[in-house]
Amino acid sequence: MGFVLSIAAGAYNQAMPELPEVENVRRTLAAGVMGQRVVRVAVYRREVVRGKATPRALLVGATIGELIRRGKQMVIPAADGTGQCLVVHLGMTGSMRYFAQGSPPNPALAKHTHLVWRLDGGGRMIFHDPRRFGGVWTFADREALARHWQNLGEDALTITMERLYERLASTSRGIKATLLDQSILAGLGNIYVDELLFRQRIHPLTPARRLTASHVEQLVREMRCLLAAAIKARGSTVRSYSDAAGRGGDFQLRHQVYGRAGEACLHCDTILRSLIAGGRTTVFCPVCQLRWGRRRFTKKKDL
DNA sequence: CGGTACGCCTGAAGGC
DNA sequence: TGCCTTCAGGCGTACC
Image 1 (tube, rainbow, N blue to C red):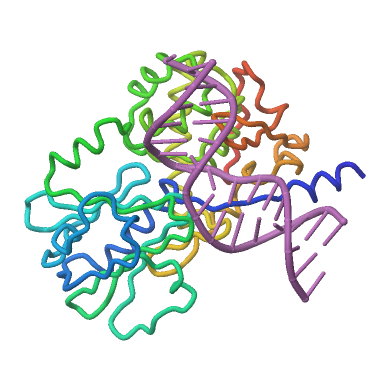
Image 2 (cartoon, rainbow, N blue to C red):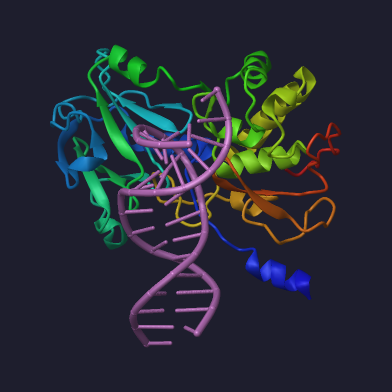
């Protein structure tokens, strides 16, 4: 009976754009806006723009170049080669949407749409963010962007095993807090760190420096697999995430631990537990993820 | 250095 | 039905 009650109590959720979600926003947004010229911009909430919020700084008059992602951040550059760009961070509930010419306004988005860019093709790009943990930064050139990113870690999809090992070996913090730290590694958030640690059978409080080179090699390999699978499934929609076309992802259906505290471990049936690590709710299997565990379980084919 | 707490912010969800 | 409380968390900052 306690089992059933635990399941009922175990459900809590929140959506946040992490690397796979931002990558899908990048792709779907690029399909709509790349190569278009910005005709004008409407700023409904000045405070979501960090830095200059003039029409020029917000790309009015510029043609949109190739969208880039690093970690959870997305760059919308001017195509003129000056390095001028916008950096979008979606925070917890932010979204970028593209509406083609003639699309009617979406009433559901009206309340929290803070920025609207009109494009010369007749379409529009919007920044929407109820909670406003996200924002848009404006930069005039490459150097300004480089300064903004000087403390940002390497992207989770491109970091090598050697460089991650170096970073992990030089800290005494727990592995969960360390992987969440965007200055160490850019792109992972609460969902994917929990999923990754479960798949690797690593307890979230394991000191990062305890991981051997071999552990880190497998961790990086698994991280790439996990992120690739999540991108392929168009990300995780737990509550509110959707891409630039308004389409949600499917990867939440394959979460093994995130949001499942109190439910049974899919590997060993033990009740999943939660703790606070790095200030975040962390779900893990107390049996599969031994604190100093070295064994990895045989990876299931279906991530 | 790290860890802890807090503030920002809204909406979903649970309790009564 | 509806009000009230709790909770979710990325990130910056203060403080120990």
